[in-house]
Length: 140
Image (tube, rainbow, N blue to C red; front, side, top):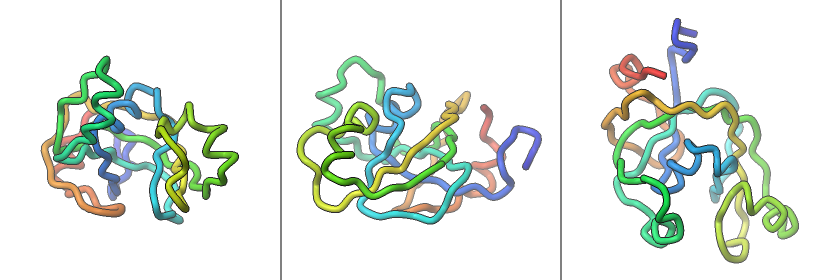
């Protein structure tokens, strides 16, 4: 760990807006993914360059205009496969409308912290390493 509490090697997950902003606001604590991971621990949050336009219309009250960079850090504490029952029961935590879209996984976050300033950077599919220059520029 470094003096700012972040590990020297950090991985990231790219999330479309407004979902990333909802996570930063604490309104969304479970991210829905079509794939699981064995990874647990500190995770940088990255916003994709293209927003989820339908979701932006559903959440006009939040400012989700920043695209294409690192915006926060969280801790990934659990990943579980959704059942139809858990999908419905946890809707207030994952916020995804509609029926469960096939087999999906809930990535549970805690200790979400927003960066003082976003850091412009390209994202990637799946978990990806945070470049060292971006990691060094992160201020919580």
